[in-house]
Length: 281
Image (cartoon, rainbow, N blue to C red; front, side, top):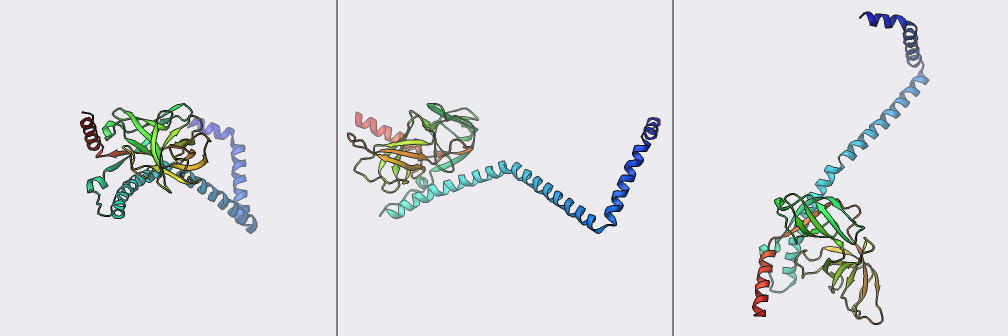
């Protein structure tokens, strides 16, 4: 207490000056309309600016939660689309009706990207879901815009995905406009471009045509977007088109993916392998 009194005593001139300064400013703005209005408008302007900045910070901090909600909603929509496509096929083909289990065979597991590469010759992606979440090697992986790759290996809580940007990975694909079947593979240079092969030079290929997954695919449901035709060419001594495809998935900003669980895959592969053995014998 004594030290406080000593401090006030030493600084009494400054304290008195500060008090009188504040008092004079208060009297000036209280009893003069114009300065009062200027002060009021200025304070409101900076208060509004501060509030806007605060709201922007709050919105930015909530982006992660919003992105997670959107990704979850996309997962649900993907399952609906896969089922509706199977049902639509039933209606379009005479006397064909898809089994309910077949129509609903694809389930989607939402996962977050933990690590990825795009500059290597063989690129991989690490996601935060593993065998504890029902994931297994061979399952397809897509984004909200298109094909990403397939799972190579799993631990309990993580999985490594072979990216489409891998020199040895091939996806069975087709042109959406005419259902021409081909294969999509990365050329190893541009992470935004893949090549589509095995499309006959005598078939029409249009620029900007959509390239999607084919119906003959263990890993992906049919009609999942892979990319868009960017360039078409044919060499004189070749029988197939040379097609450059702009990938639909932007691997530079990839944050969330959906792992596709084909619940009937084991049954289908087992039956086909048995049939193959029978033929060989």
